[in-house]
Length: 348
Image (cartoon, rainbow, N blue to C red):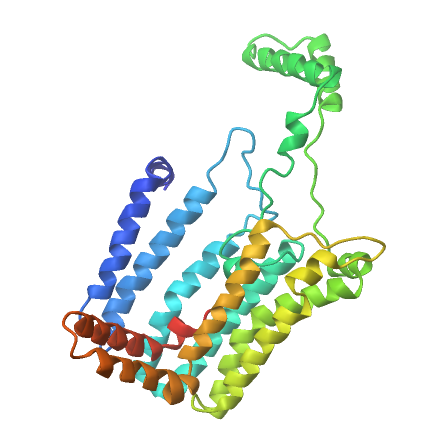
């Protein structure tokens, strides 16, 4: 396994190219949106999991200055979430094939519940930081802690270097009994060397105490975003895919979550002139979540009543045009086929 890790880290560009090519070729597999779609989806899921594992190996590459990961926990939450997202379509297809359209929602609900539990655990484990790409991308502030080590000057830094060299000399002379003076020097080095700062993760109580009601609203927004897909699926199980109730409640949860703490509010929140910091990655995440609202156009019942009719009318309008009409028909066919899968349009 270590040999494979080293190969992936050395050839990451080559690995990315192979993965992109393989994932693109899966769309050319026969009978993709037919009743016998289990085989193609199994291939796609396996390739997706391999891609997720390779990304995890690349992202956890140890550096010279930091041999340990910056993540507060060694548990691979992003890898688990990515693997589940790769498996969920296969789970949906298998469940629909063996149990039918109605009972497949039980399996989809179990999958979404598993993702909710993992994301909530990740949300708590990271000190209630915003989840990026649903938890697939670690929300780590780049360069945090590096500046302090780079700007550290003065006698302490020089003495630390000298004592580090002295301790290395002592390790290389294992056959000779270690002198007491060297032992004392190492003890002095350990006392003078700045210890790695232990990052204390904020708890829910500290967030509420420091940020007040706005901290609570921030946590509520993230919980709404995490639990929305599960609530949407449970409502579909109860009312059916053709009902407007799941569609409207899911949309309302997204709108409420975005409105609770908009970007302007996050930047202007003050309590004694204290502000909730928003990184560039978190601003991009807020924009990405709003872009996901486009998927509501592709979800039933809105798709069946409005979007599909527009697509079919466009297809008929462009049908006489050479090449363009053919391409439009293929695109419409692909969109309609993909829309039948919940996992393609879930945005979770």
